[in-house]
Image 1 (cartoon, rainbow, N blue to C red):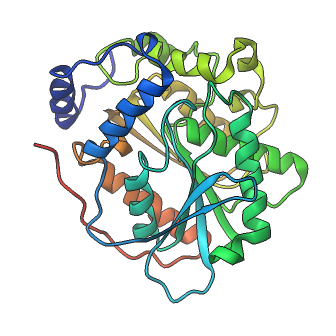
Image 2: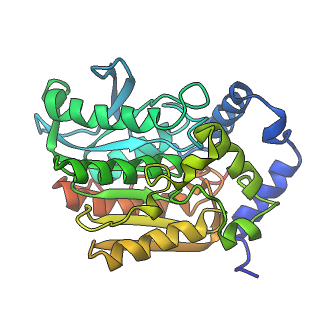
Length: 324
């Protein structure tokens, strides 16, 4: 048995149980995207201070949204943020609250990428899009007010998976690495055989079965789970990667692989800060209006981000409190 759930999590789960949704294997990806967008709109963090936003497209035509807090800098340091959602759901809107909060708290720009989703664009299409976006920021970032020499990369869940893989590929190509990785409950082993997969089977939004549904849509051929570009925990070496700030949560099928990845980073000589919140669930940061723990976690991550990219953290902002 693991630690008990946080009381706020228990209240949220009880409320969600009153509005049951069909299992993922009974809905289409399009239906799942709609439901996820509605959930995030209702439960996401809502900072009380404004953030300027601009919508652009990369050289490949992929949409990005730039979040820019008030600053006198002509060129701002930047976090490239990759949203979660199992490579199948999620978009610029579902993670708007996270990106706004990080931009405000860290005092740097956040560039959110609307990378192509599976199953329409299966592995490794999303990875290719991330790498192309990094190259675009280095080449053309100044045209949108971004200083790509002070670039960090991060994301949650599937987005954190893409961030880790991008860093490994950039390292292997001898290209400029981000200054840090910001990894929120990362998916690092798509073989999906860990003890936490065996343990987290019901009662929470992301169960082992639901996680495997995402993996099947992303990979299409499950043999790709052996490829470290899908499962970065299997990479031969993690040496030479950027410093990492990594979050894991206790009630999450991805718990064990996230912890294992943090250990492997440390063993490889990478500076890593690992925060484990044992009474929380996967998706904590997109449920911040119902789960008050989300705001201080993001605040801590933003402080580390600000130091890494040389930004001036702007201090704590108030966010909407727990949902009724």
